[in-house]
Image (cartoon, rainbow, N blue to C red; front, side, top):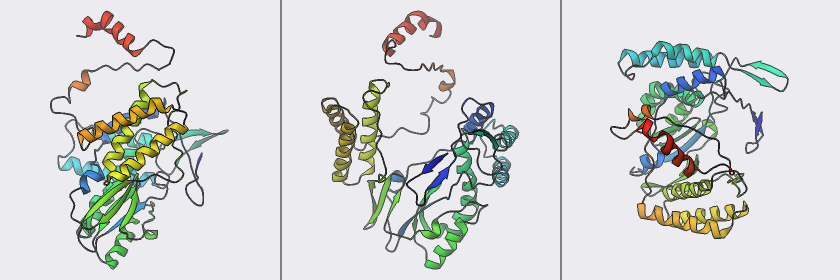
Length: 350
């Protein structure tokens, strides 16, 4: 059980680890077949023309995992899969019957241990299973596709949901907004805080602050006040390249997220101070940060990894074998492992 101390009053959420269980192996398989890619908000709103009177809104689901009725979710996803199957829109070879059975098996057999008790979950998503995120995403997406978008699409210049967080650009009337808020809440027993939110010219969404400026939306990195910035310390048993990767990844993110260069500089300096507070030496960290800044400026903007496989590579992944070895600072180096692999196994796997 964990406390969400950034909420007032404090809220408790159960955290269940299903790693290594038989049910989670089924859940991993189910997650593979339910996967769905999404585009990033910044890319989608970059060229939007914001008309006069348009306002922004966000809303969060209230304990989404806990408040999803299991029977309703199974029913909804079954409706959707059957509908897609009848229209021939499922991928080739999609195991429809097996997916239906796997959904029921995983979501109706969530058994876990807490303190001295063995508990059986009767309501809510099977938390801790691999498919939980995609399950919750697809569940509410059915309501969006069949009710929200058809009914309010003319009022929504933009609408995007990531799990239990929604961001949108509203152009409708006050009465339409009231009706929209009621319909957002009208799906199963899941509830949202949309009625407590107000339309605004600036909102915080995920790790972004989005603001209407003229006829466009500008963005800035958003960090919660209670963010502890617990980057890996120098004494941590991580490969030496991890901190360099962390720095480069964060600087790429800051460069993409901040419309104005002064905001990018602000967050890079903040990252530098937080890393020093974690015990890193400035002689090591400073060159890494400067190199990363030079690279992202040259790319202008830095390219993000694509969620879709490159043409001609989709089938190749199935022929790859990955060996995952636990890292230890005193073990032989990765370079030496590769040399031994090439020496003794190179001819076999060519």
